[in-house]
Image 1 (cartoon, rainbow, N blue to C red):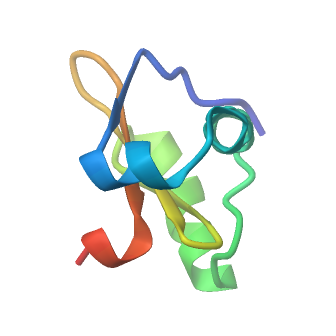
Image 2: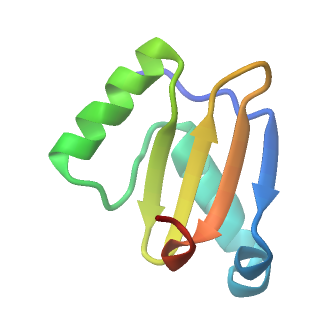
Image 3: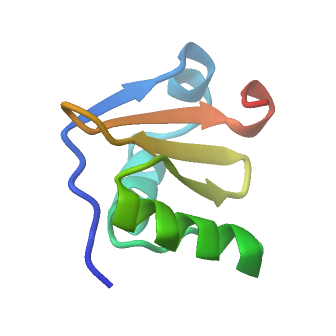
Length: 85
Protein backbone atom coordinates (compact mmCIF):
# COMPACT_ATOMS: atom_id res chain seq x y z
CA UNK A 1 0.00 0.00 0.00
CA UNK A 2 1.26 3.46 -0.82
CA UNK A 3 0.78 6.59 1.22
CA UNK A 4 -1.43 9.61 0.68
CA UNK A 5 0.13 12.84 -0.50
CA UNK A 6 -1.19 15.42 1.94
CA UNK A 7 -0.71 18.90 0.53
CA UNK A 8 -2.88 21.12 2.71
CA UNK A 9 -4.33 20.55 6.19
CA UNK A 10 -7.33 22.36 7.61
CA UNK A 11 -8.70 22.08 11.14
CA UNK A 12 -12.15 22.89 12.32
CA UNK A 13 -12.18 25.37 15.16
CA UNK A 14 -13.28 22.67 17.60
CA UNK A 15 -10.56 20.28 16.44
CA UNK A 16 -7.93 22.98 16.99
CA UNK A 17 -9.20 23.45 20.55
CA UNK A 18 -9.73 19.74 21.29
CA UNK A 19 -6.59 18.00 20.05
CA UNK A 20 -2.98 18.62 21.00
CA UNK A 21 -0.27 19.16 18.42
CA UNK A 22 1.22 15.67 19.04
CA UNK A 23 -2.22 14.08 18.61
CA UNK A 24 -2.69 15.89 15.30
CA UNK A 25 0.77 14.92 14.04
CA UNK A 26 0.26 11.26 14.94
CA UNK A 27 -3.14 11.19 13.25
CA UNK A 28 -1.77 12.79 10.08
CA UNK A 29 1.13 10.33 10.02
CA UNK A 30 -1.21 7.36 10.41
CA UNK A 31 -3.68 8.70 7.84
CA UNK A 32 -0.97 9.47 5.29
CA UNK A 33 0.32 5.89 5.69
CA UNK A 34 -3.13 4.35 5.09
CA UNK A 35 -3.74 3.39 8.72
CA UNK A 36 -7.45 4.17 8.79
CA UNK A 37 -7.92 3.73 12.52
CA UNK A 38 -11.31 2.65 13.84
CA UNK A 39 -13.08 1.67 10.60
CA UNK A 40 -15.04 -1.43 9.71
CA UNK A 41 -13.69 -3.87 7.12
CA UNK A 42 -16.20 -2.48 4.61
CA UNK A 43 -15.10 1.13 5.24
CA UNK A 44 -11.44 0.12 4.85
CA UNK A 45 -12.28 -1.49 1.51
CA UNK A 46 -14.04 1.71 0.41
CA UNK A 47 -10.93 3.73 1.31
CA UNK A 48 -8.69 1.37 -0.65
CA UNK A 49 -10.95 1.70 -3.69
CA UNK A 50 -11.10 5.48 -3.25
CA UNK A 51 -7.30 5.67 -3.38
CA UNK A 52 -7.32 4.04 -6.80
CA UNK A 53 -9.92 6.46 -8.13
CA UNK A 54 -8.69 9.64 -6.47
CA UNK A 55 -11.75 10.01 -4.26
CA UNK A 56 -12.27 10.89 -0.61
CA UNK A 57 -10.68 8.78 2.13
CA UNK A 58 -11.60 8.88 5.79
CA UNK A 59 -9.83 7.85 8.99
CA UNK A 60 -11.26 7.76 12.49
CA UNK A 61 -9.10 7.84 15.61
CA UNK A 62 -11.19 7.84 18.78
CA UNK A 63 -13.00 11.21 18.64
CA UNK A 64 -11.00 12.55 15.66
CA UNK A 65 -11.97 12.30 11.99
CA UNK A 66 -9.42 12.90 9.22
CA UNK A 67 -10.71 13.32 5.66
CA UNK A 68 -8.65 13.79 2.51
CA UNK A 69 -10.40 15.06 -0.60
CA UNK A 70 -8.44 14.49 -3.80
CA UNK A 71 -8.54 17.14 -6.51
CA UNK A 72 -6.29 19.90 -7.81
CA UNK A 73 -4.64 19.89 -4.41
CA UNK A 74 -5.20 17.25 -1.79
CA UNK A 75 -7.02 18.91 1.09
CA UNK A 76 -7.08 17.10 4.42
CA UNK A 77 -9.57 18.22 7.05
CA UNK A 78 -9.42 17.26 10.72
CA UNK A 79 -12.59 17.49 12.79
CA UNK A 80 -14.14 16.28 16.00
CA UNK A 81 -16.23 13.20 15.19
CA UNK A 82 -19.61 14.73 16.05
CA UNK A 83 -18.97 17.60 13.58
CA UNK A 84 -19.18 15.18 10.64
CA UNK A 85 -22.47 13.93 9.22
